Image (cartoon, rainbow, N blue to C red; front, side, top):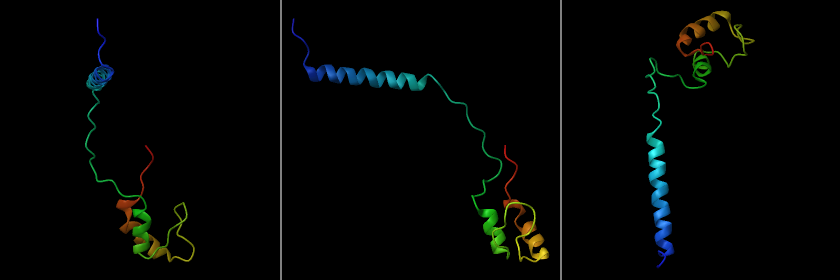
Length: 89
């Protein structure tokens, strides 16, 4: 009895591996993800908006950065409210 050519054995092994990989990928469907209801806001867009409205990047917290007029701070916060980070989920 004659043994198959080594290249034929390698080809058969690759084909078997490919079929097994394909079968494994079909066996575990993923849950469809719901579409986002709002457009995500880019990182840093709140700070960028504040700067556009006359306020330098603020420190963490609700107080205005040093040297910023309180009315300018209030106006900038109102103008940029839609870009403010929300609570962590």
